Length: 184
Image 1 (cartoon, rainbow, N blue to C red):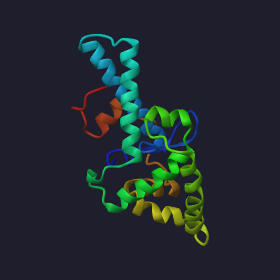
Image 2: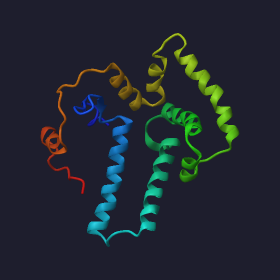
Image 3: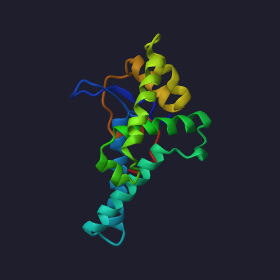
């Protein structure tokens, strides 16, 4: 996260701000990372997976990732506030997800739980923003320390150091990461 934190800027085609630590960028990185693992296995290993094996591979990776995000392990070293905060946030987050995604990820629950979660979640958001619009931003570092810092940096919208898009090769050269291997 620290390596990626300074990598922000304006994407020249859309003109929109980006951050290497944004959820969209992280999703892209993780998907291409898992795809690269699969591709390397197929090219350098025993060969292509069958369609059924590939479906299983993606389902297992998705389930593993979802469960980690929804139920952050206590042993990850992020502290008790992060552990408790992620557990509370997951209650509200699951309520927003479609049934098919819950079924796929093996974390569905009765609809009454979703209904019961909405009023307290709405009350907490109201309480944090009633008198101070940045209340949630101020609470974020206690619930999710790294995400809170990244969110603050993104909202503050500090201009990028350089208005340019950097290729992975140029970034490796610039940051002295010559030994980092390229994805397949």
